[in-house]
Amino acid sequence: MILYGLLILAYAFLYVPIVVMIVFSFNASRLVTVWGGFSTKWYGELLHDEKVLDAAWLSLKVAMTSATVSTVLGTLAAVVLVRFTRFFGRTLFTGMVTAPLVMPEVITGLALLLLFVAMEAVVGWPSGRSFTTIVIAHTTFSLSFVTVVVRSRLSQMDASLEEAAMDLGARPLKVFLAITLPLIAPALLAGWLLAFTLSIDDVVISAFVSGPGATPLPIVIFSKVRLGVSPEINALATLVVTVVAVAMAIAGRVALKREQPRPQ
Image (cartoon, rainbow, N blue to C red; front, side, top):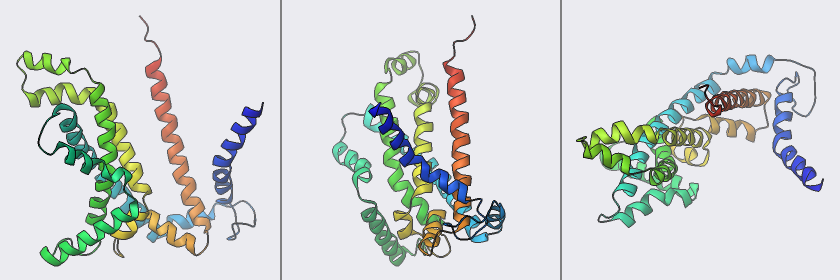
């Protein structure tokens, strides 16, 4: 009974604030601590807030771009680490790939900012803090997470399947595209989703590499919250929670159908 009580308290600690936020997103009053009646006007104002909408669109573009680039580079890094066990500089390469996993985001953001400033002074690129600098920064730290996920899947995959394909005359590139990629596709999807989530949720690194012309949504939300929680932010967060909940429900439904035995 005590364990059930602790479990309920744990879930309440995690989800009651989310429920309260959703409820107050329909509050007619601008004061988030005072209930002024049911209203959906904040959702309407949110749809007319160009600053928030532009930031949301920028965050989506950055997350999709950085996640895709991270998945490609992370997959290549994982293949090198798993399939090529001995090469010069392997230890250094492994450390460079995994370093962002344990590196504080403040240090990563500051280092990238100094790098961009030095590159702009030497070669004139990148010019200011923009979409490009944010993508490069997000790719830098999300690449490590993709590498870990894909590397784990590759290390568990039966290498005899690739060897059999090569024995039958397939070239290494053909083996990789026709055999390896389909087998590690779930890991690629998991790595892409993880990189997408990390990018769209990042605040610390984005604060260093973003500028007035390119401000991601988390930075906009953080700046608004510093002046007091706006009902528009509650509405925005409710929409995000709804989208995530629907996506999880669809994914769970698909996984459940796959687990069901097929009729003979």
